[in-house]
Image (cartoon, rainbow, N blue to C red; front, top):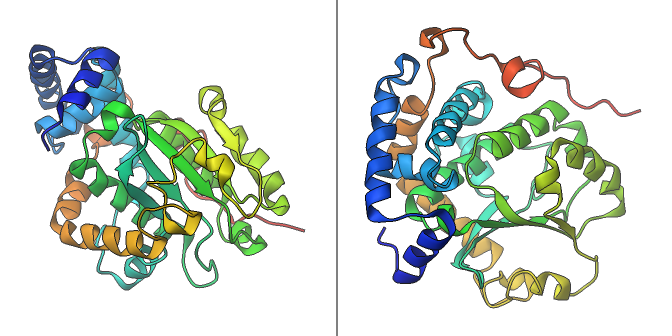
Length: 309
């Protein structure tokens, strides 16, 4: 992907990127990865390294730490990062739900807007783990198609329509904590704004629990929009010109976005298979003490489903 002049200038101003610094950072980090015995399978192409360099604003030691954490956490989360075959029936069904929908246009600050619909599926028919796995597959493909995201940032819209008690019963809190810990600690690109919409009163207690898993920095970016028949409050954060028609916007509908991203994931099935095998750490070869799931997530590796009286 060739960045336009506006994005190149944003990269220069916001993260200090220029051609010399970019090439030198890629050279140093590539050499560092190749010297790590536990990272022998990791890709060292320019795009992979720039993903972290840009997210860490070219601070070399931060880049190294973030890459190591990212790879260790992915390896410790086989429930999310293994079995990446989009043609499996259970993943076809998950991809059809439209729970993770990056919009096709940017907002007024050139940021990528992603609509999350975590309750747009029947938990009695589909596994929450398969839903999250399909979401990560879409995110992986989005990353190679759109490097602008790692310069300008992300805006999240979390649509809570459809929430019911079954979603809690069938989604272990441990899975939620792992998901949030990975997104906060491993990914170099954090959301600039997190917008909760259509929040039912019955979700209030769950919102407090989930907020407890978020860092103070991320919580400051949370905004709960008023529940009403319009989306005027959301329009102040994201222009309606790019929002789905389902929100009264001018952009593609949920159905169209779902089909678009399902198609992109299927087209990149070979890429996803390579990423599943290579983007991981071999903790048995790590110098010193291997990292464990408990160390990475502060929790044991398995969890019971939420029990509700």
